[in-house]
Length: 228
Image (cartoon, rainbow, N blue to C red):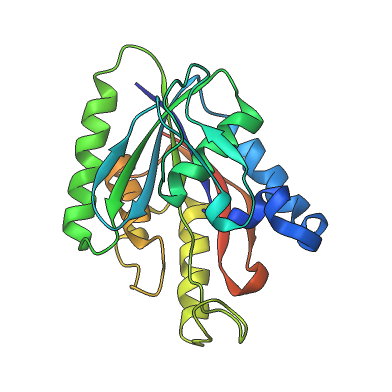
């Protein structure tokens, strides 16, 4: 049974050891992420994007070494596997889990970032059917970013057309508007993850709560909680 959905960015800069001098200015973002994840039960399924569809099991562990510091993460309290290379969404999931609910167990569903909207919706619907068959409460952690082209120094360069697209995304997530997520443009980096969320939650959540929206370093980040 699906109990709650937490929406957080896939931002390595949230990790203090990776943030360098920016750690203090990201305090509000970090606290919002921790607050959202605290709404989840002890069993998590994370949703993120990668190059291909894959599943990262709770026995896996990894490190943020590729992002500048050897910060280890695990996806469950009983991880036995040696560290392996993991997609960013899995690293962020493991880090958030360790900070908020060390006793929780997380599995990560990675979806190819080139899926069309119909394919993403279908995957979300199938995931919801799977979760509905579970006897125990399951929480979903959506790990995804908005546009990365919101300012001149942004990682993707500056695209003024991405600013209204980011506002539309933030507004949809804040309102629990699953239908609006189906219309996201490709300028939204985590588009597929958000469209999986739309399929997972359709016709929409019972309630939605915004905890943070902003664009530090020109990347759109949203944090919130949807209750199905």
